[in-house]
Amino acid sequence: MSATILMTDPARYEVAYAINPWMRPADWSASPAAHAHAARSAWSRLKAALEAAGARVVVMEGEAGLPDMVFPANAAVVLDGKALIARFRHPERAPEALPFARAFERLQKDGLIGDVARTEGVFQEGAGDAIWDRSRRLFWVGSGPRSSPASAQLIGEHFGAPTVSLALATERFYHLDTCFCPLAGGEVLYYPPALTKAARGRFFDLVPASERIEASDEDADAFSVNAVSLGRTIIMARPPRRLADQLAERGYEVVGLDLSPFILSGGGAFCMTLRLDHTSGAEARAVRAHALETA
Image (cartoon, rainbow, N blue to C red):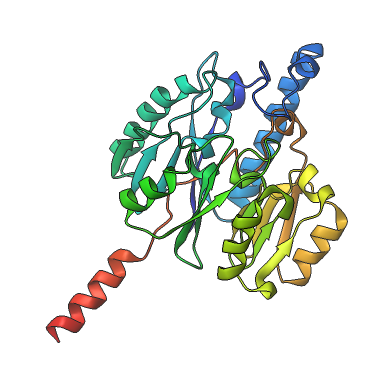
């Protein structure tokens, strides 16, 4: 089954404030029309690349004054048709929760989402800090700069899925998706300095060295780790040659795009997308178990 991916129209996108070390509003304001044009072009190229890789792309509208809605990875965690709407830490992004909730209610009416719930009690910033690993059938859950450590338990209980908590070590890599990307073949592309020593230990316990791909400083600075993995295709901000070759040697087709207008705000390909079709396999396991019990 092909992927179904949510994107937000970039018409309202701009870099108007700074809530992470990448954001440069002064650079944007020096030439806003040129940056806005470049952003629309980059967004269109990403959408086209996703569709060329076989994905269905669903587009929602953004809202004036909420420029970071262009990064719907932070809107919600979605698994088995259930959506858990984010609760944002920074006041600049907190108002996004309501329009994202309305958008998910529309997706629900269209049959793309089943249940929609809101995060309560803890900060949790969507799939940016709760990355579903299709190979291992678990969530890698980031915490620190944005999402609360307690969000791992919340996600596990809400979705009935295993979670592995990974604390982030630096404000520069403020969401897990900026430094960590499970690939379709079972490998994980990651940037070691972005994780605490304890987080790296948990990760190493579950992922053998043969399946770990270490990103360099150059790879991380290019925002290439913030990638979308669709089968044997990986779509990312234009990667350094070494990383592209390394992934190609493992059998992946790398689609590198100029996403510099969004990197100016601290976002890349993964940030700009949200998978709506991830499944845990729980339903299939339940059917098999029932068949065995009644055999």
